[in-house]
Length: 197
Image 1 (cartoon, rainbow, N blue to C red):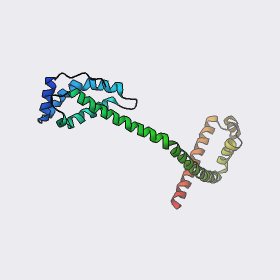
Image 2: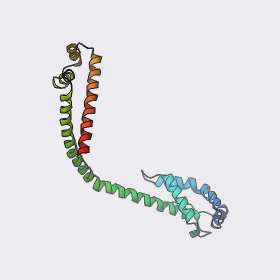
Image 3: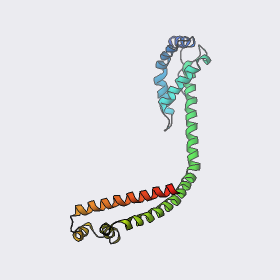
Image 4: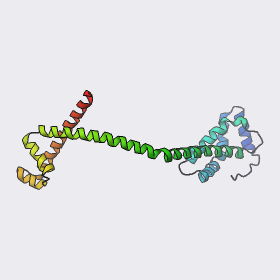
């Protein structure tokens, strides 16, 4: 870490003495003096995923909280940068642990989740299809004919319009209403099944 020697800056030493004597507002002088160079140093040393501004802020808070440990007459900048270096190292270690955890455990967790979902989806899909068939059977003959034309016979909208003596937009609207009706019917049956279980 390249830190220039602080030549006993009287203004900073006075501000630190004032803070140590109880004048908290005097710490603003310290922050103004070192904020830019500390943020610049952190920006060049922080890896992706770490916010240099956050580390700088934490460093100043830590320095302020531990100011009684600072020995007057020593290099304050070196002391502050040592705090920042420790804060940065702590965050880098935390990120490495998270990355290590994801590297080790994420594939296994993902595999388990996919297995669980595939089992659940298979059960849900089976129930859903049973209820859908029952709901289609409940449709009137006229509406069921539209479902058969579209999803069993797979005829075009134009042909459906011709067979039903309607416009294509009327056929689209009719299919939309049927789908909504079937969806509501299936959801009602599934919720009723859940309540009775």
